[in-house]
Length: 191
Image 1 (cartoon, helix red, strand yellow):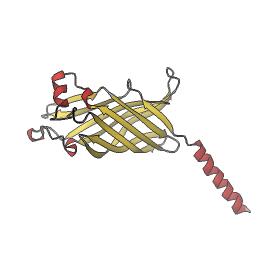
Image 2 (tube, rainbow, N blue to C red):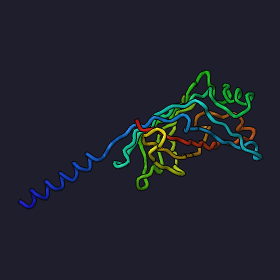
Image 3 (tube, rainbow, N blue to C red):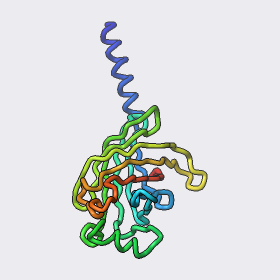
Image 4 (cartoon, rainbow, N blue to C red):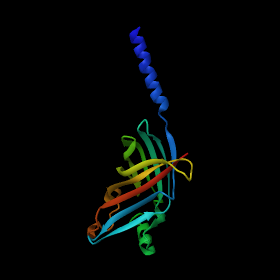
């Protein structure tokens, strides 16, 4: 009898935990989401740019410590503040925006530290090549937006990639670095 009661108690606890786990969907807010990059320029300065058009969604279960993410970036929307440089970045030398109009990051592995996302591991597709990438969170938070009257979650994430792993080799022979720092500032609005 005691084993049966103990078994029922354990089952009820597990069912209760499952019932409390809730996967929520968040749409990326384009006004609070930025995808940018930094790469050294002959060891003297840093070239920076961002992509102005991006979209995506996140599914996250904070209680269950899991999530999924999909982000698509329009490569033609690159913006460095200098139109001639933007055109060169869009050319076949680098992003080849005509042939590869999007960059995509897809993840189904979120790592939590307590109730906050610490890192997101997934696959980055750039120039038709896909490589694993881990975005580390510098900060993460969820809050009730007083303006939207909905929960918003987001943070600042970053990683460094070897661009030659995606066959983006332009300038490497001249001394341009292979490593590019990617910075993603994102906020998603609960749907």
